[in-house]
Length: 174
Image (tube, rainbow, N blue to C red):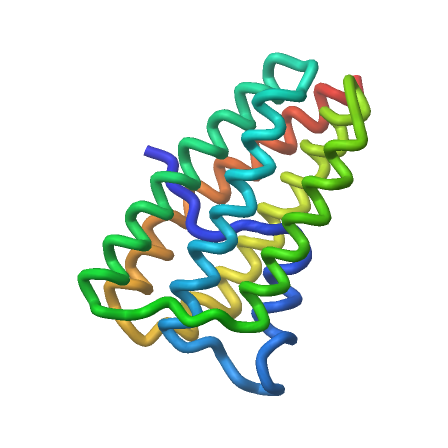
């Protein structure tokens, strides 16, 4: 089952390292909020792709993003509840939310092949940056082993999503 943990192009890797005080790593409560926010951002973009994409493969990919990221959010919320961790809003999650809203606004202005290309290009860049943030910030910063385990468990799905998005990106160019 493909279940990604975190999601938003550019903002995540930048925000995870830059939006917190210099040298500060996010704590588990902040990581939990980042996870939920980032997933919601990709759910919102995926829903838009489901309804607006003209290419059937892009529509299907959008639907897959909604399904996968919704599943991770359910797991993340359940884990936070179990651990009695209250997700803590932070500059990273605020940046993710703002970046996601900006992306959706830009995508709403597009249609047809232009929408498909912009959505897929964003997903390629986003998933690569998510992988970088997972490896360089989130896994090393997570103190709770269950939280870290969830992130490690879903990492392969990001790789699969990235490869799928790259394949679509190539097909859309041809």
